[in-house]
Image: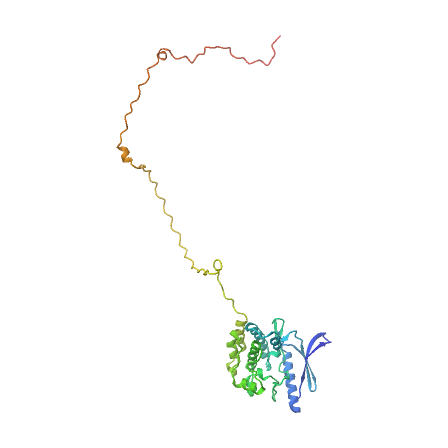
Length: 348
């Protein structure tokens, strides 16, 4: 893989070198034609989760694939450098792969080489990109090459591909399951010490699911079913992965203050039904006041008032009896009437 500059469009691109050297001339020609056909089909796919192929250069025994430069790390490199992913992060990576395969399969193309090394992740999982559509040559010791088929890794190849049976979209779905297991555990569930042991495990042994699969355990078992009919389709897989990737929050109800140490939480009482208002009662007629019955009134009623002896009145005074009362209509003093002074001077 090379980082290059497109001098005509002035942009950075990725260029991958593919060596096509078959067992004979016919095999080499068949491989070249199949690779070119797959590359052209991939170039017609325009989707955010699929790497964009710009051009293919044929140079005899070499093919140069010019594609989009994705600024991210492969899923394989992430698990090596940062460790395995959790169920939520792995499910979100799976959603990106499902979105890519929905568009790819709709165009009649099979990837046939889905594995962690061909899955690129930008940033913190903001974008998942599927690369190398059936044109990647594996250089490690476990690479597998079959006449009439593309290069692939046995760790992530579906059983029908290894046995030579017809393959289709379920084969890519099986590879998605093996890739998600590798994201959770750091390796394929069928990885063995030798290539033959790996092939035997894919065909006949049950997968070794990661211990930290969590809610993805049931989904992974169905994805890695030996028969294609037992695997979920992309629509069902999307529903299961979305449930794990974006779990619904659990509703909580708080009443009063949070219980402290040694205090039990308060129980929630059901609301009481609202009683209808009662009809207003007519006012009662005013009762006449009743005499206050004093205590021991009967005893006081039986007591007769005591007869007190009053002193005799004083005798009349003789002077008052013979002297007539004074006449108040006359006064013993007489004075002339008061005349107001005249405002005019007296005549001369």
